[in-house]
Amino acid sequence: MVLKNMDDASFSRHGCVEVPHHITSIWVPYIRADYLRSGSRGLGLIVSPRLKACWFKRRIVPPYQPIDELDFVENRISTDSLIGIKTTLPPGYGYAVSAATFISYYLLSGFLAGSRSYLGSLDEAHMAEIGVKTGLGDVLAISYGKGVAFRVKEGSPSKGTVENFKTPQSIEVISIYKERMHTNKLLSMYNSKTRRLAIKLLKKFDMNPGFECFLEVSEEFTFKAGMHSFPRNELCFLRKIPGVIGVYAKKSVSVLFIEKDKLLDAVYQLREASSSTRILRLEPDYNGIIFIGI
Image 1 (cartoon, helix red, strand yellow):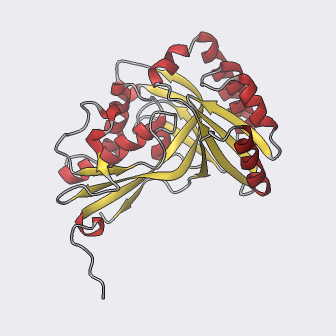
Image 2 (cartoon, rainbow, N blue to C red):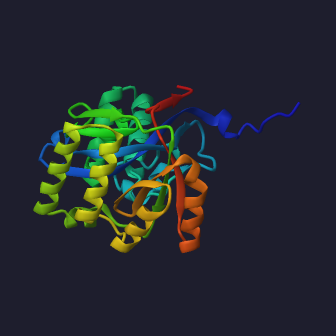
Image 3 (cartoon, helix red, strand yellow):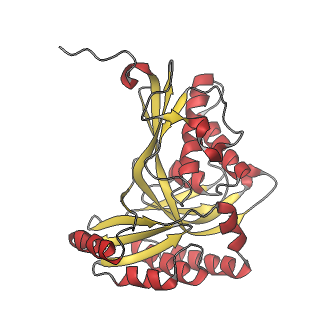
């Protein structure tokens, strides 16, 4: 019989939470003095792999890192917290890692303190993300989103509304990420023309909601609004790869939807075009936020 070391993470954790990520394709910001009523309407995809955070009894052990070491959390997280985080997707590119991090922290710390409800913790996460300017609608989308998430009403999870749509099982999803772009820079690029386009495309989706329309409007916003770091010729190349049925980009991430039987060929073409291309395979997520061992 093999005995595990008592410092092993399985012995030293009170409980954990797993949180999916969100990649926005279209958004319309609504910024108000009241953070609970601020946010964005829009479309995006809820994806795995998930971020995992755990509340440790004595010390945080690898592969987890102290949550307060992440540069974007600023003064929103207690420095004596024994909450460790394991990020699978890289922060700062457009995967909503900051939103997933704040959600996990406020849910775990709220459970620890016993002073916040589940919904109250999600609202705190929403206000923290707006406060540090890392996002507007990602906490709402992750809190309720499954597959394609349509944020029909802006605000915190206690105020906003999300509708969900499935992606076909015959489709695979990969993403490519480039150099980091801070959310502040992204928001500074957003102008009245961009807003009008986003509102028009969201209305179009609302008239005919579903996966095909999601691809259509997301791609149109990507090419016309340019709210990302991908040159147009690169997006055109991605769109023409055999098997690719749709592409959208936001911030430093582009998302490709590929016919399942063409996935390997598509990845090969991406590698041939540039050996330095950073590719991640994603899965549309339908399971929401999951607690483990609490």
